[in-house]
Image 1: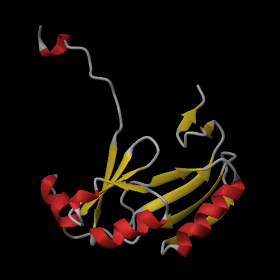
Image 2 (image 1 turned 180 degrees about the horizontal axis):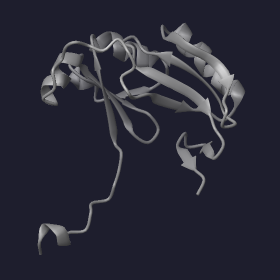
Image 3 (image 1 turned 30 degrees about the horizontal axis):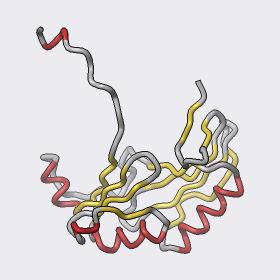
Length: 152
């Protein structure tokens, strides 16, 4: 069987790894947001959090850059081309999550507002400037299992 005859492996998204300046500080921030830290045996070398379907990992910025064979500097101060999302069940939940994140040390990027696609969202950033959208959107449901379910 040739390479072109092989069936594709099942597509799956398992982990987002964020490069951070201080794993301990960032781990404390994400724990304060309520994410469950796992594999704590790694100490402050790396941190893993369950997020309700995938994993959030925190790893030193310079080490992650080296691991990916990318330059570690300059660190971008502008938009990096990626946002993380925290989908909610209601506008009130969006407001509550944003307020809670700010109370735990997040930085407000954009206040909650009604979107042109019929949703409601706002943005905060973590201690390393990684932007998070907090959102409720048509066609995207958050189940009792905290997982996102998309309409067909």
